[in-house]
Image (cartoon, rainbow, N blue to C red; front, side, top):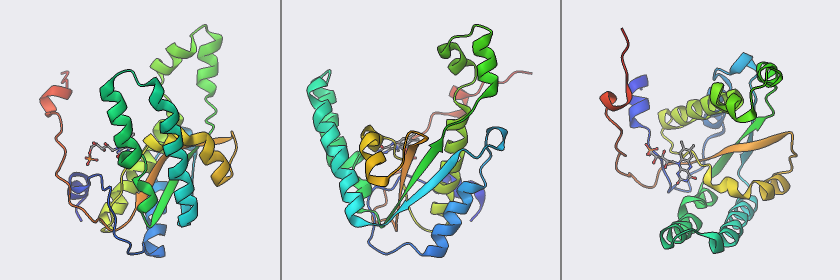
Length: 210
Ligand SMILES: Cc1cc2nc3c(=O)[nH]c(=O)nc-3n(C[C@H](O)[C@H](O)[C@H](O)COP(=O)(O)O)c2cc1C
């Protein structure tokens, strides 16, 4: 598949067939993540591959429980309705995928940021000057994997919604404060063909200088 076809053909898939994902394909997907660029080549990522149904159910249950706790704080009726949709689908559908990759971000030691802090820049200023190099690195790995997943004939969806239950995931998956999950990627053969989501026109987002 041509790279541009792969980029434009990928779309978020939220319904999966129960057909297993082949181990050799899973390895290719994880390897695509490994080859992403990263700040200072720190490679601040690791991947937890979850096929265990009970564990995936426990994770989805933790997300539902967290949404239940959030709902009384909803700021409008519309937001409360959105939370209901997140609970029943958008934050929890990963539990039905044959495999879920939890993409973890390790702590990123940004020496340059420490120097900026010593020079008097606030944490907020530094975030604006150099927005989260560790997270940017992990995001490159995520997109590499999404493209590999699509090129191999599977579907996925970049999910950060479920991370409202990050604290529960720490316990269920057994990791500590040294890392956090930055995204969940459910993987499986698509059981839907959703319409392509629109994109802003290039003229709207590109500013040419020179
Ligand atoms: C950082 C990030 C987080 C996302 N989190 C979720 C999520 O939790 N649940 C979900 O259903 N979709 C999630 N999405 C998918 C977006 O809704 C989707 O990418 C967007 O609507 C564009 O559609 P497309 O991926 O089909 O092109 C997320 C996407 C990104 C990039």
